[in-house]
Image 1 (tube, rainbow, N blue to C red):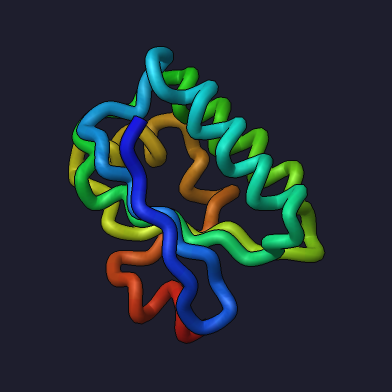
Image 2 (cartoon, rainbow, N blue to C red; image 1 turned 30 degrees about the vertical axis):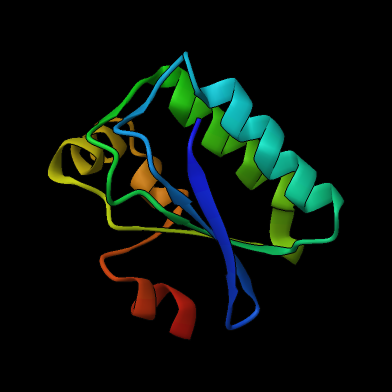
Length: 109
């Protein structure tokens, strides 16, 4: 799994560099993000701009991270491609996650 991690405006930003967020990478992503949370990170921003496919395993990993963060922290997503955005709409998860079109909008709120 390939991702880039950086800090910006109090957020730890993870730029997911894979085209697929599926069963092959979901568990690894979940474990890496859990390590960040256990290390004291409270605000996560996920750039999903390069992801063109997400399956139930990928969604499950994101939901697990959201639950772990709870109300004390923040998880913001941005850059969803039309294919990924439609999955979030079909599953109604767009109501659960803070989803933004642009990174600057996600990090300014």
